[in-house]
Structures are given as C-alpha cells and as structure tokens.
Image (cartoon, rainbow, N blue to C red; front, top):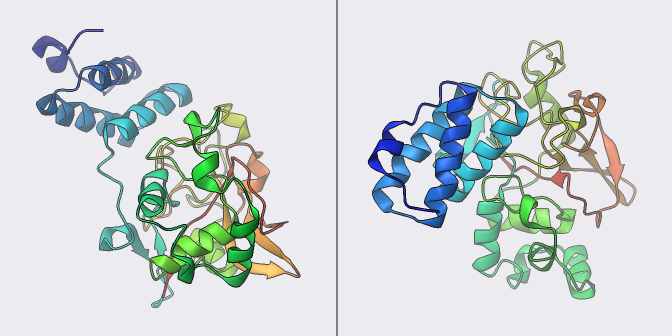
Length: 284
C-alpha cells in the first residue's frame, strides 16, 4: 500500500454507497501510512456518510470500523457533559448517549480499574479473585478483534465488571423501568423511533452482520432526545434482578428483532458473558 495522494483526498464524496466504500478504503490505506493532516478529511467524510445513512449494512459496518480505528470524535468519557442525555419526563435522570464503548472501557482498564477494588461490590471482588479471564484477558484472546473496535460497545462483561465501571465514574446501571421510559417516552413508543420495526432499523440478527457495529451506526435506532442503540447492537445489563439473576434488555446483533421491543426483558446470571451483552450508564 502507498500513502494517499492529494488527488485521492480530493475524491472523497461519501454521499453515495460507492463513495462511502471508497472513503473507507482510503481510510484503511491511511492506517497503513498515517499522515496527520490527512486524517481530518477522512474522519469528516466517514462521519457524513454514516450520518446520512448511505450504503448497505455491511458497507456501513466497514465505514464505522474504519472511523473507530482512525479516531471517532463522537466518543466521550462520562466526565464530559455531552456523554449524557437528560431524559424528558424525569428531571433527575440522565442516560449515556451510547452504550459504554471499548474506547472508554479500555481507558478505565489501563488506569487500573481492575486493581481499584474499592469500586467493586463484595460479590464482584469474589468473582474477580476466582476468575482467570476477566475482560482484559478475554479482549486479547484469539478471535476478539471484531469485538474490541474502539467505537463499538464493549461486550463480554459480567454485571460485576459493569457495576465496577459505573461506580468508578459516579454512575450506576439504569433500572429496567428507567430504560423502558427512555425508549418509550410520553408517546409510549414501542421502539426508540416509534413504529413499525422495519428493515434496517437496528443491528439485530436479521441484518446478518454477525457482530456489533459502531455506536450510532443505525441512525433510526435513536430516541428524539438522541439516545442511540436502544433496540439493537448489544443487549444491556440493568440494575434490577429476580433472586440471584439480573434483568437485561436482550436486543442485540445476535438476537431476533422480537428482542428489541422496549419492554423486552430476560433474566441472566450475573457472571454471564457473551459477545452480544454490554451495558449503558445512568446517573441521577
């Protein structure tokens, strides 16, 4: 591969599927031969293509991954006010705009999140002391690459890990009713966008991507307030449970669209870890 030429940069036009594919290909080239001034136009073009919804699901998946590897400017930390969305009808509740991403979770791991045990519950500390492969180990394993792209939701975390991350950032997991309200709002929407479900609305099994995608890639999967990926992409832990099990919202890339309904809920073991299960933060 050779560095990008000025003519190639001038050819960026993400207003069509063909242009988006071309831009993603140039982004891959840049990653092999990085030159700082060329990054900004590539990022801007990929963002425009994603925002405008051009391309089919697989073309957009590739564009989203390249954007994540280039550095997705949409990503924030919980300390950033823009990370949060105030939920209409609940003056005390804010929800993360996106599920927690690999980018932010990996930063917490690098800062010693798994050693700062004061943020872990007693059950979480017991689990951590007994396991040989918490998320930092699993994330380096064979076959993990498609699941650790920076701007994709972090997956394969237990509820103990999710709660420790939340506590470390002065936040918590949303209650099931808070999540339902976020999706439905006063109009009682069955899905974040309303109805019907419709093809291409969310990253569910029917999209046949076979993996998570960049947050916000499915632009229809968003509430009017701007909370994304509530119907698909990854299932999410909640703060509620029944007995020893925890409630999750099951809508995810590896689940059928029936799991995307706002009120859908499934019980999971707190130590469950699968590549379609992530989490989102809430705060009062």
